[in-house]
Length: 409
Image 1 (tube, rainbow, N blue to C red):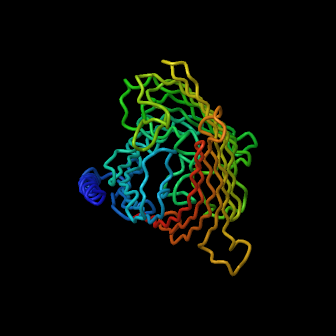
Image 2 (cartoon, one colour):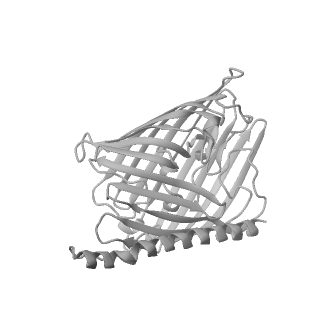
Image 3 (cartoon, one colour):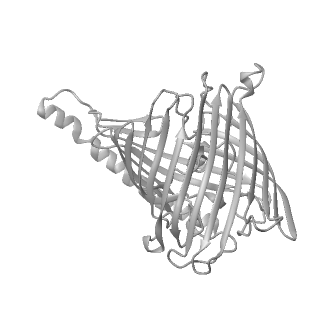
């Protein structure tokens, strides 16, 4: 069944890709003739292959589009091959599969200030991202559409730019994930000790592809202090081996009402112990503290999360807490004999799904390694984990091994 679904998704993806290529060809065709007929300053549109994939430039600087494909092929052992919340259905067998297959289209239209981006998942046949951003100035941009809300770094980081095969066990419990939204963001004090980035916006609260009738909406605010006066991008591993430190400290909060207590790429859902809700049944409040740092071949990032869910029908409140810390190192920066493309990493994570219940925890210890052939665009990742889930009176401990090839073209 999984193979059939994947093939069906690939067929849809192929159709989308063909439409994109046709659009690029149509845009490229008339540009040279137009320039010649109007005898204006020479501009030449062209199609080429760049760092993001196939790209089209109309020659004026106003219109630029790129089209790329990313595939993740994963082999995993044990029923904890994926990171899911406790109680979620999981596979009992070792398998190899295409975990993610993405078609991406981005660039800018009409003006470099208006950027666009879309992403389609050909494995699960889902439109993930569809957004437009207008940059008025460094201190103000406005974005509308559907995308991953800028709440916490681990989720904002693309799955193709992770240090491990998958995100930590913390993510399913606390992520806000993809939402339809309108967001203002910007950066002030650039290059100074007060260098700060901010995001503030209104989210649908209904999750990816959700119906607005299922939620009253969520407010989100994030403030990030770039304490070195340098911006650290949302990408894991110190691939550029920066000679000057890049770091940030961020706080974020989310508040509002929704029919859902959890969010993922599949859309809105429920955490264990919660039932499918009425519109606006659950009042959500979340807070997050995050640090990140890269220097030389060393990288670090960490998050602490707090979450409160109030069932407005029963008045019951559930409080969750969790966090993770991870660090990676290219030891070739220290030892000349160490392979330059190889990175080693360690992650520790813990979740308390209900702070009022003793002995109810989930813990993860993961060792990871990456071999970068072409940065995050072509790499092999191997990680080994030990995950313990305690739901009194039972304790479930399991080991897992995962190997993944991530390739973009």
